[in-house]
Image (cartoon, rainbow, N blue to C red; front, side, top):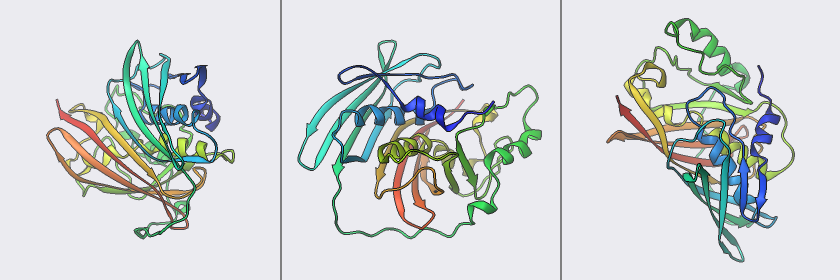
Length: 285
């Protein structure tokens, strides 16, 4: 079964219940809980619906409070904290069964000129020379334990090409750094806010994995309880999520059953377009 990009666009197209209240679907894609990138993207959509045109998100900070249930609608409520001359601030709560599962603050800004600098993009192979993650996964399927179901049974709408692929069934210890190219599989409409929401959706995909690389462990070996605790993003420059973006990730530290991870996101032209940071629970069972 293929999951088209239109499915993600529909996932991000929230139903308006009343002013500041929106409802979203949460389809069952084979996971035990709702994918974190989904609620990040949907919360950003909800906040954006309450902000006047000409102001795009420049930063967001979210906390995962409870696991989200698959196949249960999510209610997003928006608190209009402040509408200033240059900045707009919103607070969003995602609710299931009367309880908050996620909370996020988002700041929007008018377009302004100013000083500019960035870290240079590291050297990376051209994405066209790398294998799609689905092909990598197919090669490693022989190492899947007997009876273990295929964890990604549907084609994802986001194309990911890792620079140094990891075998999720037989991981080996390596430094806590990784890079991958990513993009939406199909062309998106010319809507800057939608591109931000799609990037927020995919930014959660592999970030926490980076903290597990030095320890040769995986989600799929049964030894860990793993969950995102928080997620932050900063949008620096305009970009298109349907063009190749290089996601450069590292993990400075893990301790106390938590791992800290960071990511820099570059366009293929070498512009740093966004940054991300996340701390996650990595608990030994």
